[in-house]
Image (cartoon, rainbow, N blue to C red; front, side, top):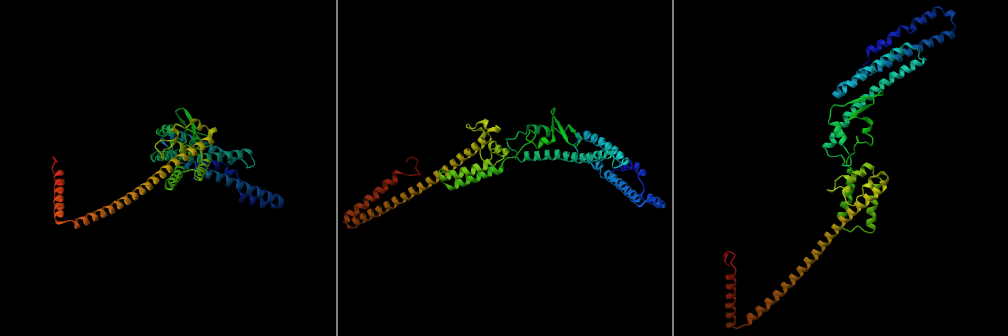
Length: 372
């Protein structure tokens, strides 16, 4: 929406612009006294002034200061924002009035136009930065809720900043924003730089790659040694040597696939976190995860060996039971042959002894009698 007051202000000098129509008529009346070259030059001058007037009005009409949505601004920031808007609009109005009174060749005209452009851009920049503060806070709380922030990130200052809705801000000439947090002035750009007001997420991609290698080692069921060890080492080196610093720290501090983070291992040297030891840290991570894979592979190998040995023992037991069964059948066959060849008196005695032994066995064990 065009600012009518500014357009009116810029138009104060409109009467001073030459009307191309009347000037041309007047020029035609004394055409015989003016050379063709002079007439063409006058027409070009009038055309240029008319273009300058149109351009001036376009600058005024393009000003979007009245379109700034203050309602989206946090309540605590509105006084600072409103003060900035008022001062900027007044400065824009003065520049527009000045430019409307000057010729385009005047250096002050270019300065006035530059001022108008700067203010217009500052309003756009301010709007973007205010949206940025709101979006960053919303995204931070979403990441906290979803537990996706890496333990390697120190979010204590962000927690302290965002939990207080009373933001104390300073707006720069270009619409840039600086926040005052506990006496510390923090530029909004710091929220994207490597500072205490930035954070990063858990390296899920890296942990997924480790899980893939772990699953491979588990299913392989073979000890990781020799050529197989070199293959795993190569894959781990490639992964960690191409990993960003923040993702690498996530692999060190986060407990996605274990209960204890690697930085708490007894063999971890905190000096590895120094930036000059970056390559040593990558090597340590690669070797540490390789040892973990070797442990998994050995466990799988031992389990498969135990299962194979059990199958051998089971097969041996079945063979022995089968042999014993065959011997029992042969023994019974021999006993029957002896019984059939015995005399009537011997058969009667055998039957009496069998009944007596069965009766004695029944009287010795009675599951229903607690006294026996």
